[in-house]
Image (cartoon, rainbow, N blue to C red):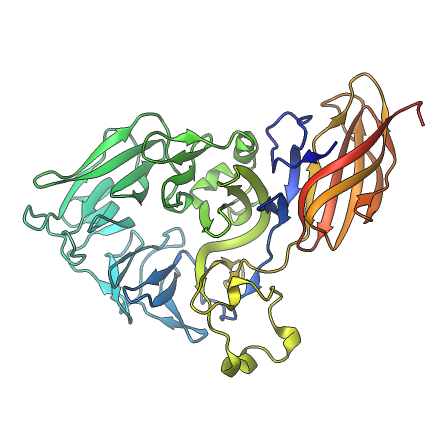
Length: 484
């Protein structure tokens, strides 16, 4: 009987039909589980230093700017090169000070917690907004720029503090009932502010184990903040992903979806596995990335295998199908990339021969002009788009068999929506659930199946694949031992 893949489900009982106890570079697709797309170079030179934040900013006339920050500078992509758009003297943020960005009309704003909030209007270099505070986090909502976890000349360092600019004026920050610029603190719960994202006309402010709903009230209050019940929060700004109608984020003990009512846990299939695999010392480095077209959220994180806390893994959630996947990938930050750099005039300068063209399909979004594409800055400090051919991938099934009798697996057939280029199957077995696995034979893929023989009470198989595969399910053939 066909067992349809349930996605990456390491926390489910292992004999659940369709459960996957492990997978590599496999993510939820439209019909089943598909190979994660590989990274393809965006043909930009390496950055001068590690990337600590980036954005594709969209002006009111729909022109787009790709900006990536390092600890000391802000760079803008222009004609296949990086142009330094830093303010005079550069910046003082250290390697742990991330750049956060927001767009306010034609003004692209940037903050790193160490320097006054920066702005660049339409084009050109960034400069201080003289009256603005320093802020670790910035966001735009309802005609205001919100600055969170702030430092300023009047109140000093307030990691629980918030400021809002004057309404519809990002350059005015002096508190005033007339302009509605204001500030305050969130002290009903302990800890510093770790994130803040707009949700409709409201803003949700996060601490590590608490949340606040911020709502515009008008003068004299301006903004009011009410705690959300429960001890749920987010580790950092980048971990919070807005999907338009809700935020999705890893909390202290689960993954949550918050639509403005109450946080709903969604990580039941992976929760225990993830928090065991996450390097807890560096959980503040988690970075979320939203693949809107496919309904996927990637959370890149440092695993326990990362000795220095560098990001080496990703867990992937399909919020349309409520399924999970996994990817192995080393990155510095996630950022969109503006395509449209390739045309007949530039082709020869970018690629010497046709064989040098990127390995992506002809219908890939990479070829669409001015399309903002899902991308990352990798460990080599280069921008890579996430639209290549499928990575080498694998999945390991849960257990199937019987507590009372031995059986022989005689074959396993895959149900695919896209067949693998190549595949191999390895058989495993154990006499009792929870006992150590014994290694059985392997078989190669032919005619949609694996011809494999292995005897056990409980069976498990690992399938290794190459190519743009999408697997819907698997169908093993078991014969009770002693029967033909």
